[in-house]
Image (cartoon, rainbow, N blue to C red; front, side):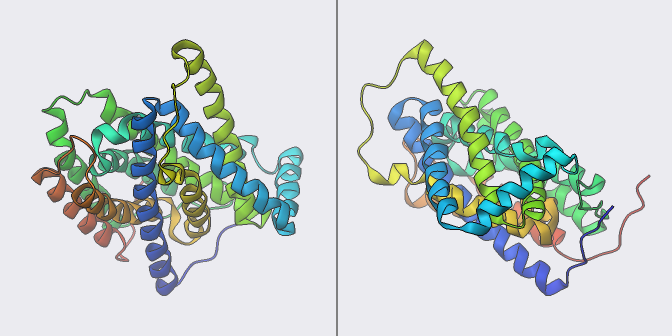
Length: 319
């Protein structure tokens, strides 16, 4: 098996900083897509608009960038030759679930509560993928600090979402972003593999949006056939920026994951998400949404968890 080279501490530090920026953009997209879903009263259509607009942007970029087109040929050739599993190209399905959950639950939960519910899924999938490896990326040792950081992150999630369980928010609205978090961890891992095979982050990002947009379009067509289309579309331009934001942070994650691994990428992006989430919920709160003390405490605990996980330490022996 081909293995990835070891990365210096400075490279990992830069990678974690990139992961935090990915998280800031993810939280911003969560608010945009959540508000679009609320304005439309249709989370399915909001998700299609977000992924679809991102796909249009990437089609234009691919047409103008020859290395991206060559990367697409390399990726498909690798699948045909059997050196790359076909499902590596389907990472966008995980992104589709994430964006759909944004549109359905984001405006009701608030960005902060939505984000911390995702953390649990991301942490569990990140630990599992890093422990077992994937594709050309070998298993990563489970260190003391990463295990402690992950455990603290899970505790932080429980603290942060505790208020939601006691209120009028149904349990499925917290379970949906949890499932999305599990899917996002796998999405980041396979997108990183596609980038490696194709030699182009644009290729991996394009495939992510192509698959995600297709999945969402099918789901939306079924949904609209049952409930019908909204009577009118929102006229606020900022509500249509979710796709553009998504192309940036998905592309960034594709690059960063090679240095950080899935777990550290997930925890680093969580730090950015939670900080930006609280800023948004405090400065421009969603209608009927308030920030409670438990959410703030959970956010602070998660930041501590990320800092602990990023500290180098000895590996644990896991049979």
